[in-house]
Length: 396
Image (cartoon, rainbow, N blue to C red; front, side, top):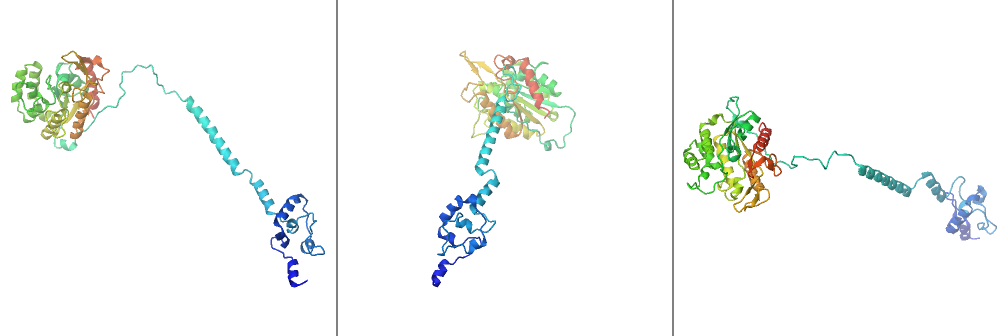
């Protein structure tokens, strides 16, 4: 044969144990290898290198496929190795995935069962309670220590009380001022004028409406200037014993000994339909916010060492001239409900850094009608609750 035929029939040995016969029909060899997988026998070196028939071609009737017959001793096909490797690896990815899902499912069921059982909270739906479950509007602001610099402590806590009916309805030992004094250990001077308001009804004082002369701002102006001429005239016009007594007390006080000042008005401003707020004039004395704002600033400028407290109005109701009953918590008389007034009182306290004590939600609420007389006047039980409320905050 020529060189070309010799090269065609020449057999090459590859490092992985395969020969050129595998390249002739790779597909048929793999099928033969699968059929004869269990009958493979070691093949001699001669069969790998010279096992050909007389024509020089590979044996076609061999029981072992050429892919298996030309494999080195001890070597296994890559397919077999992959099968054995999978068997050795054990669980595959799908099995692990389903196991994880099963575990999560079981844990979810367990947690649902535990949550459904729950635990006893101690809540009794049939329990009767007098407590009003709301957040109080208190704003507690201590006095700046710098304001007390150089001031000597006389050992007595002296408090001046300004306001209207809550203080003036009862000025004796069972009155609010006396009960507050007992609850705090302070000496409290009652200078409240019945029927008075925080705001003024008229832009300027008019003799035909004397109560403007004892409104909060004009009262503070007289106190700061120590000029009580207008109030002498006004109290005579009013002709009320409580007003005359309040003025006498006010004149007798040495303001150098006063440590704190308490302001407490009921719903009178709301009842009279006074304006709550004027955004163009923050010291408009015809508004509740403006009159309180101006009064606080006047007191702070004149007596910076005095700590100021404001108590909010309590809940109340009253009967109008037409016989209809007004609920302060519900009815808007043109400038909001009583809570709108209270919110602006709170804002004035925050703006000026004085303490606000909430008695609307914290002492006499809409559920405490047994603490009231004639709709909004405090009775003895109501005064006790307000005194306690004040005493809880006052030391702080």
